[in-house]
Length: 495
Ligand code: MSP
Image 1 (spheres, rainbow, N blue to C red):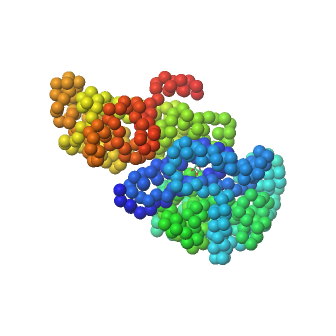
Image 2: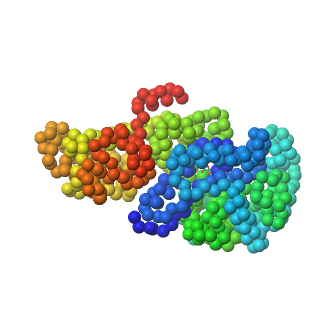
Image 3: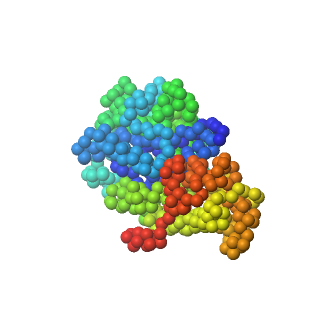
């Protein structure tokens, strides 16, 4: 396929404060699907993910565990990489904010903003919990006390650097007006417009009461405060802001895929930082909705309460990688929140995969075996249904309808019940009208071309093989996933 240019897609870099749950998996699976689709279309794709490893919370977690922050994050990040490996997430790069390549380059971005006159020293005022060494806003307090430890808080002030975010309000609004595609869906753009119209405050970008972070250039008693460090990853991973080969090739990003709670940081702070540093802006920030459990956002605290239902490793063991990925992509409407339960997942897997797709595959393969000697016949005519099969790409959103059309075609249009076949196995239909192997280069009639649903490779398989045992020769994965009715019942009862 021809090279259509570059396509740079990113996920948020996740906090390795503990293991990831199904919500993080949801975002990464979507980004992976988009990256794979773009590769299939012929784009030179660069897919970045990673981890956001600094900050007071991680430092506190490490202290609790009796290890250094670096030791703590190393262990969690190893688990995250293992999860993405198991799930066959096709990322091209994994950035960790504790890597020297990131730390050095963030300091360069900071310096560009500082030299522009956009960073100044001031005082960070707020309600402070001495025990947790944390500042809180009035609304974060629980019964007037620290939401973490429950102790009373006091007014305090700490020396800190600030970024002149307020200077960029008009420029960001202009960006939304001139490039509405910069922030989607539209509802998020409207929210951000309202937020900016209420007035943007300057942003605190350094702290000096903890040291697990990237030192501020020329003032190392300060460490950079979360968002400057984290957001810069999209540029530093490519070698930017220096004149680096990957940076020149892939920046600006085509899509930053993020959850709706961090759209604000990506669509206000990030473009303002880039404008300040005189760097090009990403083309799009795409905000997705949340997976909910019992009406609330799936979160690490829920996962910590032993709710296996949100642990992707358990779900993979139970249903398989492809079923989990398919479910996440198919079940939820992009941009909206959706409830996550085992039952919703099982129903989707059973109805769409085991029932519709599984039955279709099974019927098709047994017909080829029974009536065509196990050989997919060459196409002799070209029906509408073949268009659907050959150009399924264009019909992704109508996949269900297409499957139904093919089923209906088998049921009604070809009117080929068993007797017809036995009597007249030389007729047009049997010669390949329906089961088109059109475009297959292989000489041998015993082989047929098929696109693997796992790796997306077009591979040839021996059409005499039993479909239950079909393995993709490119990636080794099975072509199908069937959850039996008994398993479904057993699991539902377990819940
Ligand atoms: N470290 C920051 C992001 C910095 S990006 C420069 C962060 N990390 S996080 O670990 O909290 O991950 C947040 C992202 O995980 C969300 O934006 C979203 O993509 C995903 N999700 C976490 N919980 C989720 C749900 N319950 N549902 C869907 N996605 C969720 O924020």
